[in-house]
Amino acid sequence: MRFDKICMIDVSNKSREDFKKGEKMKMRSLVTGLIVIVLSVTLVGKAIAAGSFSTYNMTIPKLGGSNTTSNVTKVSSSDKAVVCSDQIGGGYTLNARIELLNGSVAAGYQSISNDQRREYTLNPSTAGSSYHARIATTIFIPVDVQATGWWSPDNPGSCGF
Picture 1 (tube, helix red, strand yellow):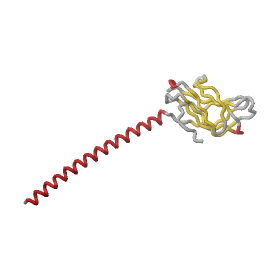
Picture 2 (cartoon, rainbow, N blue to C red):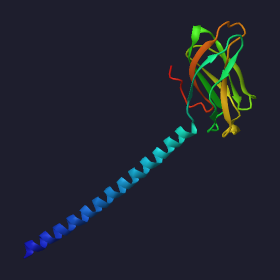
Picture 3 (cartoon, helix red, strand yellow):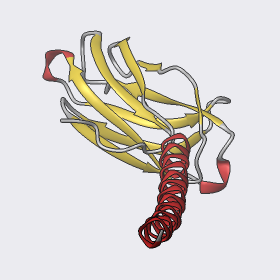
Picture 4 (cartoon, rainbow, N blue to C red):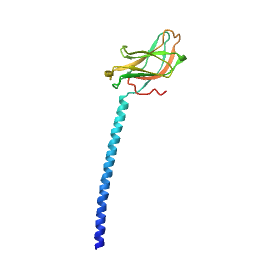
């Protein structure tokens, strides 16, 4: 009889310990899950807030002609826009600037060549406004020039070259 009582006590103590361990594991899992959710939301939020690049592939008319990229709405309060030039035909140097949709200049021309990144300062309170990049030849370029690259009014990061 004594042996049975000892076994019962031992079993009941074990189940209490197992219960406590199980509760601790549940709590750890819950805390870990919450941390993962918070980090995921933070990282996704930053990615969305940073905006994204828009690509361009266009012909720029000769002798001071210009062309514009597609319009992009600024989503962040960052004060930097960026143009990343991938390839410019004939190895020419072009000029690029950032404009509002009405054509007013948001950031003036900077020269740009193959594999170059140019940053432009914008008013950070213009989140929600739409912009495009204008890319132009100089008056001394006698031929139409093909240009490819990407740009953003939100400076989402490295150009990758």
